[in-house]
Image (cartoon, rainbow, N blue to C red; front, top):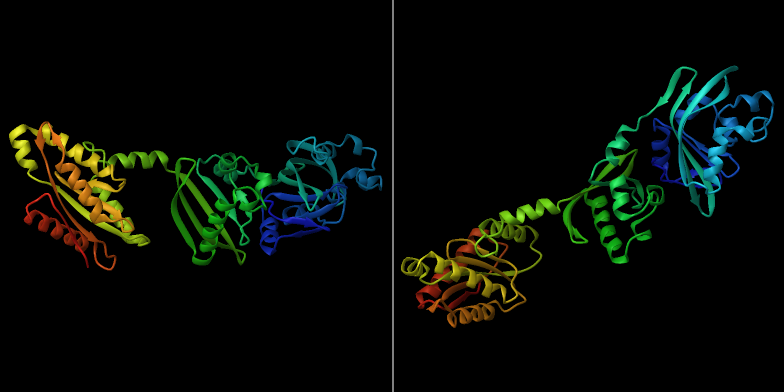
Length: 417
């Protein structure tokens, strides 16, 4: 149910958007106070019963007995046995928080004619400003044999059965709708979520971050990002939509953990366990899109790997490649990629001394023996400039690597620009 409003002194508050939305909702909607007095009825019900608010429930529904006995709702001879009254009472006193009843029948006096009315409705308890209200959504209304309201809630059922998290917020960032998957994930019942803000339920820093992105969407129109929550990855898509001259924030959150894990396999070099050429291309593209951090790019090349493979076999060459990858990672670098047969690309944040790190890597490799064979590497380093193309930056690093080779191999060259 889309109840995102506040009720006070007989007035449905929350802006014209909510009133328009509820008035044009194809289901009937009725709001009662603890005395069964109607505080709000939407267009679908007013069309059937030709009544407005400020009357008791039975009077609004044109109960035959209150009409013929000239008694108020709750005071006729049949009120004690009324199924509608009995179920509303269960929710009102807190025996149940909500209840769905189907095909309950009562007799109404409509246009001076006695008719049988069958109702299927969902009754929920609302508490606003320490006052108790009853919200009733009429899903089916049949008068004699004519079905005047019939809603199988296909859209709601479809959204509720989707695995993706779907919710909407108003311009004040209060929830106006959330599907079952989202409510189950956060452990909050839908009726308790509607009309509330993130700060009512979630940790302060988390709600502040979400509020920041929500405001960005309301200002700019859309937002898409990947977020990691409790060890899983989610693709978050938010968009501003316009309904009845009011801004609504629509959000779809998709769990992409399994997809991301599969993609990681595509981006990982099977021999060394570091990233491969695809992984490097993807990462460098992201860096140039965001431009939020500065990096140095180092290109490392094994010296004389072809001779090792030709003289001692590829098994030794594979051991050397694995050892080099392990040595680089031991320096605390996470962005390491094998981009060719014996060439590695290393991305180092510029708050670290990339020249010193690369010299340490080179020294450790030169000091080591793999199957009693000495090995060495040459490295070229350059600071990335986002004002230039990805290829231009790579070529500068490749030139620095060539300079190291010219110096006699086993050396590091850094080009400053």
